Image (tube, rainbow, N blue to C red; front, side):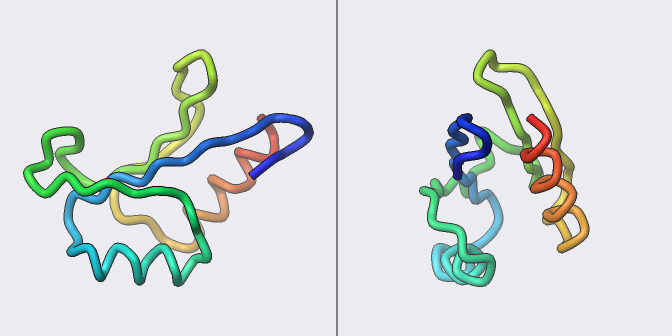
Length: 81
């Protein structure tokens, strides 16, 4: 995704779903970025979405699996960065 000359890179971290469920979730939203599995929850103890800028600073995010309202809010936040 490119927004006003700024490139965003995404990496999904799947801590709860099977590979098949995770692929279905990505397909449902039309997302194509890579996703890695963390079934032992070494990297994430609960579902969360974090937006980190190029300097490593937290910009936005939420805990939990998310809802369309939360995903849309995150998209709006990306557009303002």
